[in-house]
Image 1 (cartoon, rainbow, N blue to C red):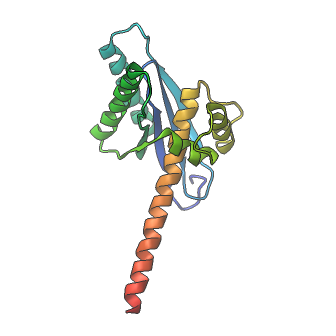
Image 2 (image 1 turned 135 degrees about the vertical axis):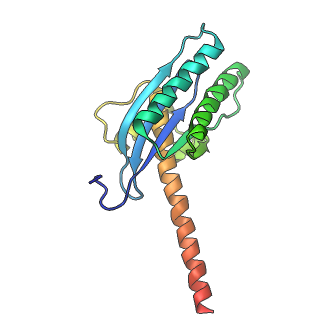
Length: 186
């Protein structure tokens, strides 16, 4: 038994991309129930290391997580405009590695903006990192706050996707049911 009754829980790997710290978090759950923590961690690479070696280290760790935790979906933070082009490039490159790892296995990939994630987890698209970490801890009923913030952000991404994807599927099912009911009445 999964703890969720008869419904099979969805498992989501959240990736908060970065070259120095790439947050990884896996949660599982079903619509209308609190999500459960499966795993959380951070891939670290040295700022002085060669870019190819850094991306390879991230790729190898993401592959290890995919093997170990068997997610149904991978949710990656969508790169947003920053003033530091170098930071944006590193974030985009690490995010692309996660997308390729998922694609190689045929796993669906979802991209979520930071404001979408914050709104889903805290109710406020402008929440700060402390508010996100606090809500992630509460939602997952954790005794300790995930640290560093990249780990909490990865869990927030996974929770966001779990809830958003479930809501999208529910709305689509309701919409289909409504259309079928309308057609049946004709």
